[in-house]
Amino acid sequence: VAANLVQLQWIRACMPTTIANYEVWRSTSPGGPFTLAGRSDQNTRGFNDNTASSGVTYYYYVIANDTSGKQVKDSENDVWAHGGFLSS
Image: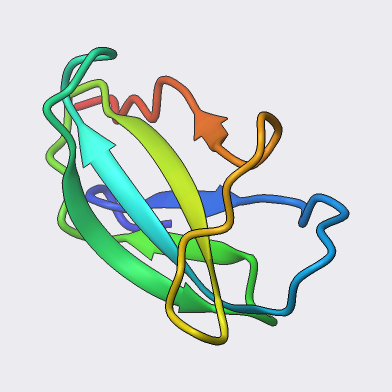
């Protein structure tokens, strides 16, 4: 694994809509602000952040988008991957 790589994986929650893609958001603070780190298609359910810096703790969350481009929202939708820490 590269020194500047954080690998994220998640499991799709049971949702009644068809998922088109996932947005992965990243911050260096647990409360944000978050910026879009990238997108993943509906079948991948993972993301490689190769822009991360060594020695920095990152906080991520994932949003699912349906086929009409709307965010799928329910209380269980947001997936958090806390503490993507890269050692130097």
